[in-house]
Image 1 (tube, one colour):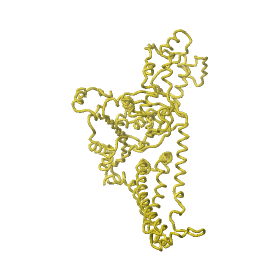
Image 2 (cartoon, one colour):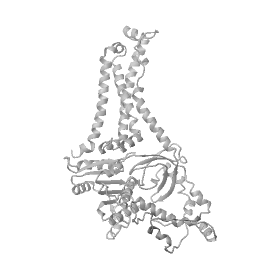
Image 3 (spheres, helix red, strand yellow):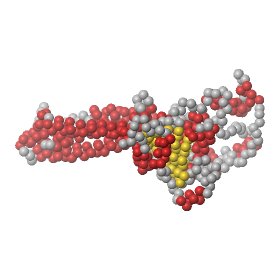
Image 4 (cartoon, one colour):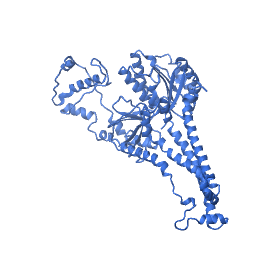
Amino acid sequence: MGNWAVNEGLSIFVVLAWLGMNVFLFIHYYKVYDDGPQFFYTRRLLGSALALARAPAACLNFNCMLILLPVCRNLLSFLRGSSACCSTRIRRQLDRNLTFHKMVAWMIALHTAIHTIAHLFNVEWCVNARVNNSDTYSILLSDIGDKEGESYLNFARKRIKTWKWIVGPMFLYLCERLVRFWRSQQKVVITKVVTHPFKTIELQMKKKGFKMEVGQYIFVKCPKVSKLEWHPFTLTSAPEEDFFSIHIRIVGDWTEGLFKACGCDKQEFQDAWKLPKIAVDGPFGTASEDVFSYEVVMLVGAGIGVTPFASILKSVWYKYCNNATNLRLKKEDFFSIHIRIVGDWTEGLFKACGCDKQEFQDAWKLPKIAVDGPFGTASEDVFSYEVVMLVGAGIGVTPFASILKSVWYKYCNNATNLRLKKIYFYWLCRDTHAFEWFADLLELLETQMQEKNNADFLSYNIYLTGWDESQASHFAVHHDQEKDVITGLKQKTLYGRPNWDNEFKTIASQHPNTRIGVFLCGPEALAKTLSKQSISNSESGPRGVHFIFNKENF
């Protein structure tokens, strides 16, 4: 059985409890209506179909009470974020909310069919009695209730009590929709649009009060493309960054419309970025370099003369953010200058950069974006394990971009309380284009870990699954080079698909007596493979190695 009880035990228990409740309600109410003395005359009028109609009705009430709860995303995110209420095992069940939602829907469909068919027989027998096409006993019973003050047996006249079952969930769902509507009306500013290879764009945005965790996702609506459509996208930024971002691959009508709405298809947009060549000489020292040699300083700037103090104040902010007054952290990977347009040369530079062109200004007329979220996913639990396996397929790498960025920031800030000790990262792509926009992050992490003397922290394997042997052999001649010719990383690109059985066995042998988190964002076929491997490669004892499988669901 391996790790079956750890991976699936609680899920099976929840499903069995739900099925058991359905069976109990069906049998209980069937007996009440089939044997209860209070329904003797109603049974005489309607026959055995009475119990077959009322039993599934009770189950319908129960399942209609549950159907909306799994899609209350804010409620689920609240439960996930409440460590006092939810352990890791319980949070894993929240990731299967859509699966449970579908199961409840199928159960509702089943009981609706039974309930409807039984009532069709009830209606037929009741109508036959009303038109004197039945036995005398049934005809007399069907007439009861026609006169004022008489009680009646007609099931169609009974008061419906279903509302008592659904009023609570409906109230929660109404609150859910109000919260989501309120959040969707908040202003979102697109600060940057980046076009990546392989028809992928990156939107960097800001929103007042927006807070996120690694691996979360948001819903995005662009009214210029569609006033009704909302689409989920995983956040690729880290919580430590002062913006949030998503990567969108252009694969359909809506994403194509967003691509055009952002101006990424316009030649004017591309021409606006044909900036002039600039030569730089320096930097050279000034008196402002001595600002950190004093305990108290007065900084006085007049007009554009404030520029050196912008650099000083930024540096102070970075030092305080990192709780080290003597830390020389290269937080910004660029240098900047501010130029006021006051003469011929500056005016010429202004025009050379295209700032006077209408096309340049039009390129930045970005569409209005509505954002709902963020919502929790399985990837939030990645820092709850000491060892994790991250498996991304194609664009499914996006949640792990957020995780790896966050790890990089934590190491930049010398995080000593990080529980995560080892990451095994697997990225499967069909062709080389998808690697280009993500390889930079991996290279940063690779360099950072070497500087921290912790190169073994991150082990990554990139698989090119869409190439045959002839294409792969062309690059095999460069295998001895220091860096990979495709990605530019030290880790060489692999061709074909991973042998998951070998990968799991190797990791299990290197980390005995460890709970290893397996996180996937990819197709269902790969999910089934990894789930089976997680179970079969885990030990049955409580102290052995256990692979805990988690999958992204939107």
